[in-house]
Length: 465
Image (cartoon, rainbow, N blue to C red; front, side):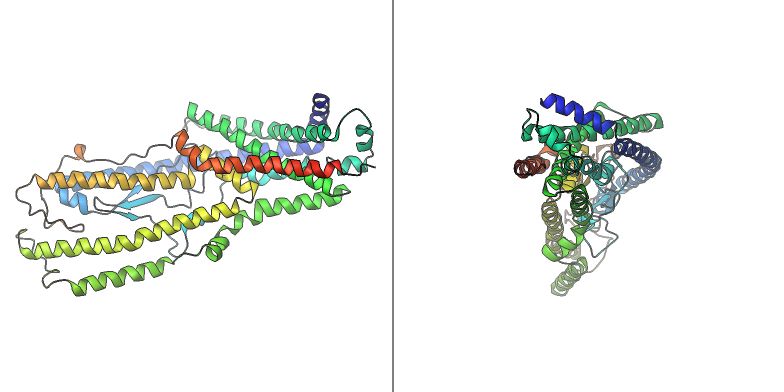
């Protein structure tokens, strides 16, 4: 009986005007979004390659000058635009796109907006994740909001239940048909998008991308399962389709618009952190106190003889200044990460946000990628510093007084650029993507089950007359 109901409901959906209009709209948006991505991505790649060439050239020039100059220079490592960002860009356009570092420290990230947490930017690109979250989430509701109340108005619900079919089977058949109808709309859009990417010629479609595409379809189906269940809830909670539609619109606005755009407000008021201006002021005070308390001669600069005791005093002061700044800024960055993660957990009340987090993990981008790069850079910085100290230890003309900002009291020898450790970003493995996404995956599956069970509970008591 379930098979019969499922077949009837799918046919009814596929032949409906709402399906045809939804399919045309979604295909058009997928095409527009993919064309926009391919053009912008090729330009972004060209800019990245130019920045990477300049980065490498600067490091090579510094290595040829001296190992100390190479070690103390602050530089920004640029992050490569992801080729699969058409799946889910993770707002990377608005995230910090580089890491400032030297051999001595990972100093932080570029942030144009000095007051706000850059991880909380709410801007979106027209990628698959956004299309599914904003348009197809509504379409999932569109095929279920009147599944019960509409048939009651048409006097077909009582007739259907007059046959040997249980209410649970009827409701489950309508539920599954809505999910299959959703996939019948989203999958053609994805296929069309992949064809455009393939024909663009500049973006490779690897087996990894195809695997990520399959993962994206799965998490999109999970989101559709939640929204379809919510639509059924609206349909059995109301006595007519007009009220059901109003309820469905209310839920959609709450989950797709209100909660996703409340991140900055929630972060500021529920999980406040210190402003970056205040952090900079504390750093300035700490550095000023160290300078005032420094022994006489700590600021003298006599580069002619590196073994002058003043250079040791200066090096000690510079290390203390760096450690003092690090002791303030590193906790601030950790507070930014915690603020974002806690805010994300709060906004996970929306199934649309759960979908966003899962799509981000599937694509291996966004915040999880940024955190991996951040953590990997701290490992690399330790390797870079160990490399420099080994070079310095082998130079008898160096006094070995480590100054993290200047090259006056360490080796002046050049170093072969080919031997210098280079940071290479490693793509996230499947396990690295799954670990942070697993709670959201469990949450969205539980969301779908509980919402459907609530709909079933109401439908058992629903007056079909």
